[in-house]
Image (cartoon, rainbow, N blue to C red; front, side, top):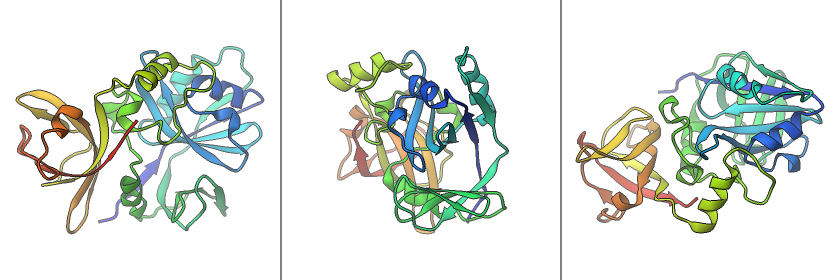
Length: 267
């Protein structure tokens, strides 16, 4: 059944908006053209993902952030501590409804009256000012491996666990940003032991659910989508657990849940 999904958005507006975002976020913000969007993230000093989002450049000095998890007002409050003398304003916008929009080239930005469209190739994410209940975008993006972070997992996961380098949300070839040293170390040493997977679940579960075996934490569920004939989800799983799969199937976790591994993404 379709549900209402609210868009948590904020703007960074002013002459220093792009320079500020480039210094704080892990993507190459300086290369973002007007009328385009990119994936980006804000990391803490230990490299953990505080926020993951679509970053859209609406004008020369105006950026729009659509959070994939978390609160716009809380993000504005946290970012405000780093503004110092930068000439910009951080504004948490009123929530809008997220619905499936028409096909639009990947990374393009479109407008439909008051609505903003973020192009995702065969569909778009529509930030609508009207109530609607079309959540088909969720399954399409789940299959693409675009994670949505439950509140319980904000500030918990490192970028490789969410495959953020694949999405160009983190880069290693730009100047310093919070967590950059950790990102570079993991990129060049490749020591991370958690990765993102698309799975089918044996039953419906809540997003953010911890996955345990013999009381030890072995992963987490991210977005869960209950279809008529299957329950699809994105999951962060420890590599040692995945190595135990037989024909792509993982036996019961402590809560009795079973899953079928469908796809794996590297960092």
